[in-house]
Image 1 (spheres, rainbow, N blue to C red):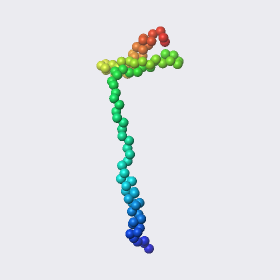
Image 2 (cartoon, rainbow, N blue to C red):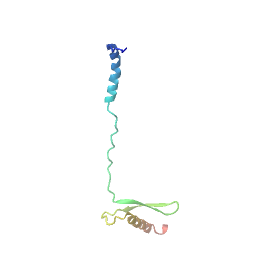
Image 3 (cartoon, rainbow, N blue to C red):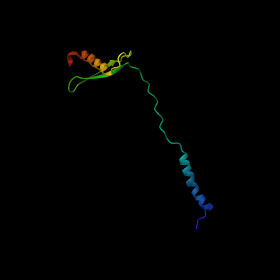
Image 4 (cartoon, rainbow, N blue to C red):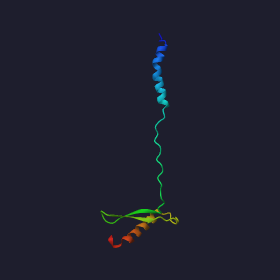
Length: 91
């Protein structure tokens, strides 16, 4: 015994089908990416050198624009020595 679909059953399902179709077609809320903040090329980097057990000297060092050395460790070491020379007897 199969149940016949009468216009009354179709009429009752119509709002549910319409709701499903409308929800499926609704645009998904996608956050827009934030605008890029303007940046400035500072041509310097931050160096931190421990002065004592509780103190750290934080200073700027110039960035080599000529890219003569690709050894980052040597560049950091040189910057650390420059900072130590600036601090002098305070260490």
